[in-house]
Image (cartoon, rainbow, N blue to C red; front, side, top):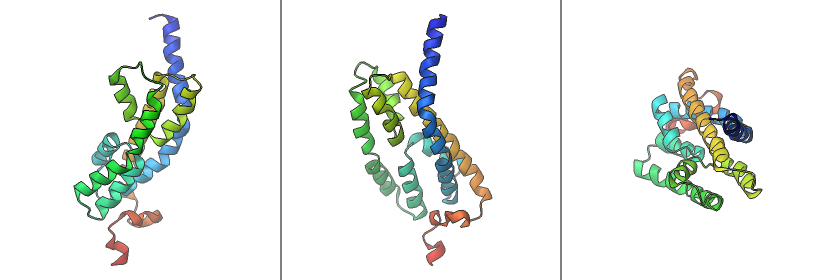
Length: 179
């Protein structure tokens, strides 16, 4: 590998991280809060991590934890999560015009990481024709890793926070405060 190709690889990585760090910074507290709420709803750190990897959609994950706490059926949780995440199809479609020549496997990996925030960061850069799939994937997957680790950290730390402390009681059983 030549020094020019190393510099080019280093550049797309730096560009992606530079564009994505605000997303990562925002995901830290929200992800930790989700982890705490999920732990209070009865999920283990492993389950929280798996949910964050498989779903990777904060709003859907918060809804799912609330529904778990309320005793909803798996079918209801899956259907609700599916409907809430339909917006990702539209976002991915809007980005697809810039990625026509990309390999389908890379597109699938890229589409997995599209969130509201990464869409907002990547789309204007694609529109300005100053962005690449590699840079966009760094944005998406840096955010994904941050979300994963912060949710698991919240799940681990959640056991040290008493039930109902810090306003977290809204994630517990619906009858915990009303019954």
